[in-house]
Image (cartoon, rainbow, N blue to C red; front, top):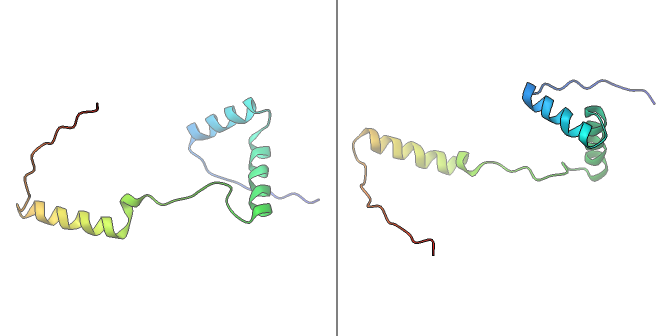
Length: 87
């Protein structure tokens, strides 16, 4: 079987922590990445959930831009603090 090279750029700290994890699991980074690729190919999906951060949704970004415009125009609405018992 012919082999190919895959180069990935990582944050240095992430790379070091990943290498440490792999060693503790009895493998190296290459084995771990190969396991990931095989799982993707077998199942035809990423083997974990990938979701977007709802904070950056178009609707929320519109809401935030509107709030900033109101703040810049001095149209802020004052609210009283509501304390809640944790009991």
